Image (cartoon, rainbow, N blue to C red; front, side, top):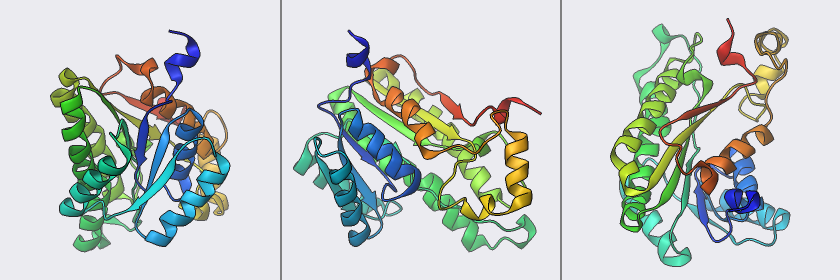
Length: 258
């Protein structure tokens, strides 16, 4: 197999949750440029439709479609996955990307906010992963990529729910591998460091926090969403056929220094 064949995603369909903007949109475009047909996901029909138009214009030689559904609703997830496969064929690649953040000191944290972060960041990847995997298992093949975080291994004040859920998602990745690898699935995670997105713009605009990130990161810069595309294509492709249950840190070296 040639290098291009190893990394090619031609003939495959990828579903990326939370892919109307930010990291999800960048990953969708990266997988599309590697040849995959793309199913975008978001919470609103309008947002998804706009994202489909943008990606179709950017990568016109692949099929791009969208499906708005609530990733935290078990019945809605099952119905959406069934409808997607009925209309577009098998989902070969799932990227569990959608996630939220909530910053508040733990002693002031409302239980409802804790539950909301846990539901979106951890329960939803379980629900979507399970619905897609049930179909992958019958085919004996499939790729699942869970977007975790550097916070899977590290912690900072005021983001306890996020840190807990990303650590949980790392171990959910391992649990999926333990049960599904023998059936031909590869399940891995990507752990971004501090990435420049709409979600982190307020932190970038904070001189003290920006200085801390740049000084704490050996690469001396924030990551860009494009920095995540290569690892995602690798994990989605045949090039990673014997990689399973791993968490790939894409953090400019932050997690390896003290």
